[in-house]
Amino acid sequence: MTRNMICIGCPMGCELTVEVENGAAVSVTGNTCGIGKKYAETEVSAPTRMVTSTVKSDSGVPVPVKTAAPVPKEKIFDVMKDIKAATVKLPVRIGDTAVENAAGTGISVIVTKNCETA
Ligand code: SF4
Image (cartoon, rainbow, N blue to C red):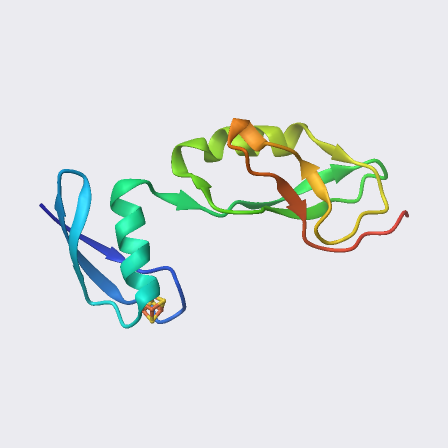
């Protein structure tokens, strides 16, 4: 089976063609660099995404957050539910944990901006 996809590794957006056998990539073409090859291989076997959002704070100011690593695509909805349910106490610093073990993935959601108390 052949799958076509756009690499999301950088703004160049290379058009990738992936030959897939038994759920794994056996060849990748169209990529300009190794990131595209890795992206295509992961995308056909176990697709993942970084999740970015905001979490509530005790002062009402929304705090920007992201997952510390890409999460399995099928877990994104559950990760967002955990983010929506969370509240952080200000002040927070970049890298502070907002949600531990989001949706049981073993991946934390971390703060991406320093926020002081209002
Ligand atoms: S293959 Fe490399 S150059 Fe092309 S979009 Fe992906 S990261 Fe960018």
